[in-house]
Image (cartoon, rainbow, N blue to C red):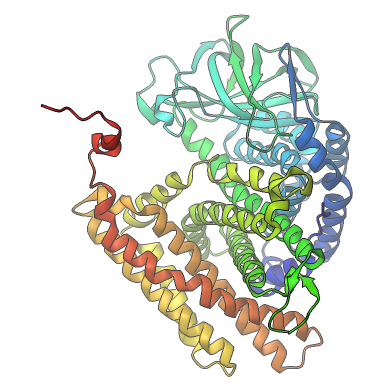
Length: 607
């Protein structure tokens, strides 16, 4: 079982040469970014490998236990969380006035990747702290900010998102949890399910952010409000009072992320309702919760990237060590490490190339998030905000679906050894599967991309991004390197394919919404492949220039160029098939009636 090693050189390349960390450091408030970037990455890598990684397999095997409403996390998790909090990792992007370090989202990308690669079961806890902090910071009262945020930043308390109910999964219009006014607070009653770290033993208090309905609220999503419901009531000075009426009635037994308690929470079953405090304005809760949701969707995309990278590392190490079959092409009579066999190389390149594309797209999106927050020019802020909103479903949907494929491929490299738990790769395969489900399934991301990001603004943002891609493809036409020229040709073709399909969906939606939405997931996949290809083409251009200039790290850049060339041939090459699937196959999606799906299992009536 391999030990996780953070890909620090690759991270540095993406941060500095693709996401332009030097430009982010010019934004107001981010001036110290470059001074601390290297040390943060190195310390995070050491923490991930030295503290979190040793608990990954043991936490998976031991899991969490529930007894009488209390949840115990696996051995070592409480201590690891204390060390994590003491090292100030939770507060990386939080403003200094709340005890954070005030660093850009760009820095959060690689640290999130490391935590999740090393131990995804652990990482889900602190991840939700950051979402809760952001939601309260942007929508809470000054009293709520000063009371809750510093303690969430310090790790003294943890946060949750409480959306899902037994009858309301992704359809939050069906939320039934009630909030009844009582003095300066509300009484919350109802049940929430699938709440990540909804109960645990790692911190003194848990701050639940809960969606609920006020009496007389409008039906549907417009009648939902957001409430802070602490596990223990909080005194004005921040000290803890009596236990609130929120209790964990059980935890789920899951396929993966077993070290992560997924809880059912009952509000108001014992003392007439849990005490909660309204966040922001009434009936705007879903709007506020989407602050957390969008942050979480980006983070889950990075989470999937981290798990897949860990699986790739395991597969690569196994391929170098596993001796099996002779190398026919080398005419060697002796068995060779399987890394020498062409099909194993294909699988490794398939993983490596897409990991690099996913990482680049995620970090570049994080950089745009920083521009959207801090650039002094409002016009530029709006441009980057639109880009981020377009890319969030792509980063979440494409990265998670691709990560599942990559973990499956990594297991395939192991052969039969991968199908047993002892080698560890099976855990990555199990753990990664949830990433395409929680915080909005891939289908939800596809609907978001087509409905909100393409159709709603008449394709304005998509058209603008495609125009940037076209301009870059034209710039690559003058490349001196033969490999870059081939990459440019494949990339230019894929951009035109994306433009054609985007226009077709927009036109089709005016007459047949079902058909426009029928292939929204393949369309999302096409966006991911092409946007990832954009970053790989940029990387190839930089690599070719570095090699031509005699850069002392030419071996790194040669590998970068070769990987980008593979991506252009093997991954971008899927664009035409996706184009045909979407344009020619969308009508076939709705071709069967509901009864026809199981027609072959119904008894035949003989006259």
